[in-house]
Image (cartoon, rainbow, N blue to C red; front, side, top):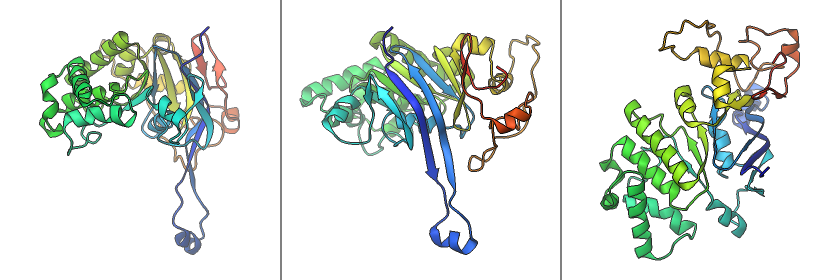
Length: 325
C-alpha cells in the first residue's frame, strides 16, 4: 500500500482566552484555556476527498489552518508526503508550500479589493517562485481563468466587478496557480446561492479528475459533503467522533452524534424513517463536560460515559469514539 499524502497525528490546539492580567488579579480569576482541537488523527490518500463536518465551533477551520501552516499546533504533527509542515521560511518549507493551497470561506473577504484579478492569481506564482517571466505569468493567468469558467480577458477587472460565484472561481484559480497537489477547502460554497453552489462544486470535482487533486473539504452542509467526499470525519467540540466511508456513514452511522446530525436533515423524499429529536446545545468549550463530551446530549449515555473518555474504535466502515459502538 502507498503511504498517505496527508498524515495528521494527535493534533491539538489550545488557545489562551484569559482576561488581561490586571482584571484577573482584581477579580481573582485564574487563566482560561480553550481546547479548539483535541487529539485529532486522520489520513488523506492521494486523489481522494476527506470531508470534515460538525456544528459551528467544532474545530474545523482551526484544523484547516494547521494543515497549511497558518497556525502552529500546541502538540501533534502534520506530515505532507512524509515531510512535517512547519511555520518557517526555510527553503525546504518553501518548496513544500508549492504543493498545497487553500480556498477560503468568503470570496468577498479573501480577495484584495485594490488588486486586479491578474495580480491576485499571479501572486502565488511570484511568491513561491513558480514562474518569473511576466509574459508567461500573464498567459498562465488567462489559462487558469478559462479553466475555472471565466474569460481570460477579465484579468484587468477588480473583484467588485464580479458576482460571488465568479469571485470564488477566481479564488480557485489563485489556489491552482502554484500547481498544488493538495487543496484545503474551508466551506468554499457557504457564502454562495444554492444554484451557484452546485456550479462551484461540479467545477471542483471536474478539476480534481482533470488535475489529480486531493481535497480536505470542510463544511456543515451534509448534502454538499455527500456529493463531494469519499470519506467523512465528524467533529464535536474539537474531537473526532467518527470517520467512515461517505456512503456507509450516511446509511449506517455508528456514533449517536452522527445520527443526530443526519436526523436534522429534512427528509425531502418523505421515506417515513424514524428520527430522534435534537436536544441540548454544544457545551461551553472552555469548561467541557467530563468523560465523553457528548454525554449531556446523548440518548444512550450511562455512568461510564460521564467518567471515561472513549477512544476511536474500529468499525466495519471506519472508526467511532463511543463506548457502545
